[in-house]
Image (cartoon, rainbow, N blue to C red):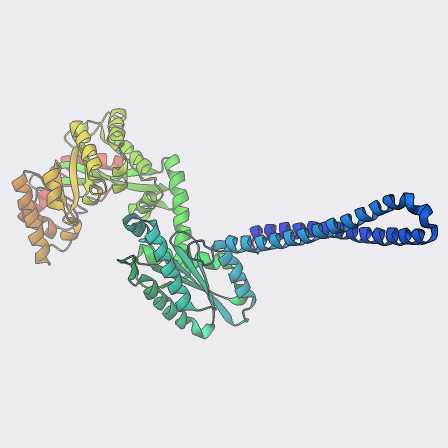
Length: 536
């Protein structure tokens, strides 16, 4: 039993002990009053027979005593009956409170505490060879239903889903609603029946995601399901529920529309993510994140025109860690803004002394575009590092623009007013590229590397690059092609009319001191594959 349940039980036992003591006192007084009545009555009638008229003066006193005895008896009996009724009311209230404490008020299913208590009872009755199977279920669109149709409709939908769960799973399963859109199921199965558990979970998923008719409207939500199991002897309910939740998160993150079984790899990945989270916090505080610079070259002249500053984590134990490991985690935990500012500050400080014609491009995360103070933060970094605003190019993906278009437009306008240049990153991978080019003043279009890596083998990719280049020429906006990693690809993009390129063909991302040496050697003509290729 849970600690809350133990506390309630102890309070109930204490109240019952107090009631029993009070009942004993009242019953003792009542018995004493009856005995006094018998004693006084017997003496009264005995003296009346013996004394006769001589006892007449004391008749009123004795009768008064008898009357008081009778009144005391009646009062004690009535009080005893009242106390019994009060005790029954207390017990009924305790039973009702116990039910309310373990039951969800909307669906009538077990709540989190009730689910844990009922599952413990289920485990206690398991055979040694049985498996406890737990399903963790989430309804991700329940909030949308509440927003569109109101909470009354949402509650009716929850009741329909609860009815579907109990009907599909039967009385042998423990079904609970653990939170707003979270449900859980616990049931016992034999080891050879675990395949049936997945089939039952799939049937349950279909039952709760089917359309429901509520107040004349068709309402439907999706669901994700995670499954975990454990032998009866080794079952710890909180751990098993946590594993089912991990499998549920895996299903939700992967947009998997079927039940997903927990495996140890998921838990290791979760532990790794937790370690990365702590490492990111520590790394930001100790300046472990630094920029690496990837050169950008004018394809017609072979001149370095800029560098893209890419985030790297200089981990004290693991060495240099690529951004795809830590950037998504930093976005999830809300630290991408601080991390990006650290990278930008370091990049601008290092590049301030380079050739004033070389521009520095820095990526802005979509999460940063929810910060209404983003423009002011960037201007502050420019002031602190002494880096000219016209040499800074901020690369923005299309997805950054559509969460809050008005806020994005305000941020972009503020930055443009300061002289900062803007590049539309990963062009062609979104759904509103033309609208973005028409409504926002971009200074550069970057063609995603996915169109470039197989440029010579894929005619569609070549056609897309040619079309984007033609469009950019018509808008008088330069094009930068990412992912140039071979001479053949370089020649192909030059033939398609692209103006600027970057990729490992020109140079891999490098630290700031190596980038400074790279610029010097490039200008000296000793590291110019572009000119060599053009000459060939």
